[in-house]
Length: 230
Length: 119
Image (cartoon, rainbow over all chains, first blue to last red; front, side):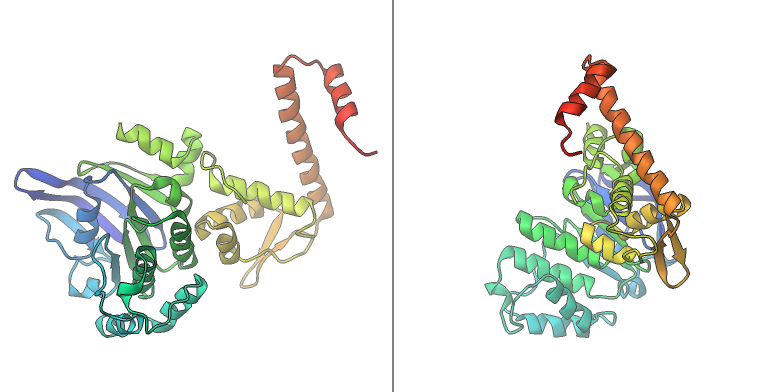
C-alpha cells in the first residue's frame, strides 16, 4: 500500500529525514514512534503531499504524492485548528465540499459513538481543547480514505479524551484502510498497533511486528522504545 | 479486561477466551463474538483478535464457518482436555513458586488442604 524507498529530505545541512525505506501493507495500523524533532511530522506531511522531497521515492498505491493521492490520504495534523468562527455544521459542510471521500453519515455516527453531545449549531470557539481535537479526528476519520495519517492524535488532551480518541480509532480500523499514527505517547497507543517504526534524528532505527517484538523482548513496546532511543 | 503490555496481546486474549470456554460462558456450539465486536469490547486492534482466533482454530477449539463466523467446538472431550491442561499449567506454576520458596510437596499439600475452602 505504502512504499518508502531511500527517502531523504534536507533543509540546508540539516537532514530532516535520512535514507528512510520501508513497506506497509493494506489494512495495517503502524506506529511511527520517535521523540519530538525526530522527523515524524516531516514524514507525515511528505506522504500527505504537502512537502516536496529531494531524494528517494514515496509510493502510495503505486503513485507519488499528488492531487490524486490527496483525494484518498487523510491527514490529521498536530496543530492547525479548524476555523474557530465556524459551527460544527459549517465544518461538516466544508469537509463535504472539500473532500469527495467525506461521508457525512459516518461523521454523524462517529460523534454518536463517542457520545459527544454538541449541537451542530455550536461554534468551534466554544468547544474545549479536547472536544476540538476529537472533532478534528472525527472529521479526518469520516473520510473514506485509503490511508490515514494521524500526527500526535493524543496531544494536549486529558486521559478521558485520550480513551475516546483511541476508541474512535479502533472502531474505524478495517481491512481496507491503512493507518499511520505518529506519536511519542507509546503506552497509550501500543495496543492499537500492528507494527512500529522507530525513528530518531531523521533516521529509521527499525520496523517490527509489535506482537513479535513483545514476545522476543518479553517487555512492552514502550520499554523497547526507551532502550532503542538511548 | 486489563492487558499487560509486556506480554503479546493476542496471547492474553487467547487465555481469556479459553477461560470463557472452560467456564461455559461460551458453551459448546455457541457462536463466537465477531472479531470486530470483540476488538471493540477489549479496545484492541481487530488484527490482534484475529490472530487469537486463528490460534484457537488451529487448536481445534473453535471452528470457522465460511461467511457465518466462528463457533465453539461441540466436542466435549476437547474442552475437558483444555480444562485439564490449564489446571496442570496453573498447578505447576504454583508449585514451582512454592518450591522456590523452600516448601516441600508434603507442606504444599498441607497448605492447600488448610486454605482451599469447600468440599
